[in-house]
Amino acid sequence: MSEDITSMMTEIGRRARDAAKVLAFAPARAKEKALLAAADACWDRRAEITDANQKDMAFGRDKGLSPAMMDRLMLDEDRIKGMCDGLRAVARQNDPVGEVLEEWDRPSGLHIKRVRTPLGVIGVIYESRPNVTADAGALCLKAGNAVILRGGSESFHSAGLIHACLQDGLRAAGLPVDAIQRVPTRNRAAVSEMLTMTDYIDVIVPRGGKGLVGLVQREARVPVFAHLEGIVHIYIDKDADPDKTARVVMNAKTRRTGICGAAECLLIHRDTVILGQKVLNDLMDAGVEVHAGDGLTGTIAATEDDWGKEFLDSIIAARIVDDVDGAIDHINRYSSSHTDAILTENDATAERFFTRLDSAILMRNASTQFADGGEFGMGAEIGIATGKMHARGPVGAAQLTSFKYLVEGDGTTRA
Image (cartoon, rainbow, N blue to C red; front, side, top):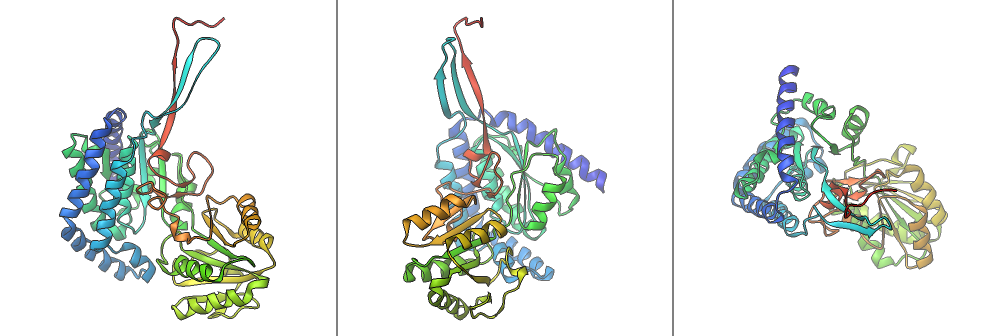
């Protein structure tokens, strides 16, 4: 079986490399047409997609997925509409390929331009959320890259239909269907193959839990854009506005508990414990399990294991800190460098929080559920990169490009 997987993945890689050569100079209008046609296909086939999703939901229930993970897996008409809207938003964005990032003249007579260019072939490995199929396919295509998609076993049927719609869009635009390929097996050996396909894949993007990302980082020989855990903190400062605080924390925790932008830890200034406890009471009334540190009342007492934990569920940890520096120290110790937020009306305190923390996304007086490429105006995202090389934060089409230098002279020679 492993030999069959190796042959299959090699063939997928070869076809992706050939398609990438065509996409590198594909007209912007053709890519736009492909994405708009894919959106239409997804909407026209929404009943088929929801039927396929029911099979995936049954698989997830049999597998014992948590309610939060089942929520990530579920597609209904509203979510399919959101997926189609994302495809159309990416389609209508400016094409990043060929964009001049910088240009200058040299005393030697050379004129130099630095321009965006596709990365080539991108491998995307993801879990549960079938809409990632559309997001990743759209963004890679917009940036002129071929993509190999390997979704989770839970979303196998939904992802297959969404992928078929993306390929319908490619056909409608006269672009190679191999530009967006999906690994057609649940066999995990395909993941191991992708991680070592240095002849065909230029970068791997893992999107999933700590186990998946850790596996990819350990075993990949292909460069990786890491999307690590969303260990998201919110700090309630002594100068926080009570009404804003109540709204923001409730939304950040409860809007969708299973996404990487959901708040997982609440840090409360010692001088605002009354407000902090009220927020915790509101969360418990909404069904959230609160793991409370010393001086706070919750559902159960917090332990050391609760700090730096991504619950991805209706659970939050909370503790008291002395001041903003105490919050910064806690976040620096336990953060995954994804998203962290401060609630304060004090500009100097907010500036200190922003300056002394180095997470990919830092927020003030806003729900951490906005940690999303679509909300940042990117149309969609392929993930939130938590590393510091090349791409960081929401990875949209522009972040899926590299650059090259175009140098022009006029018979120019070097002395």
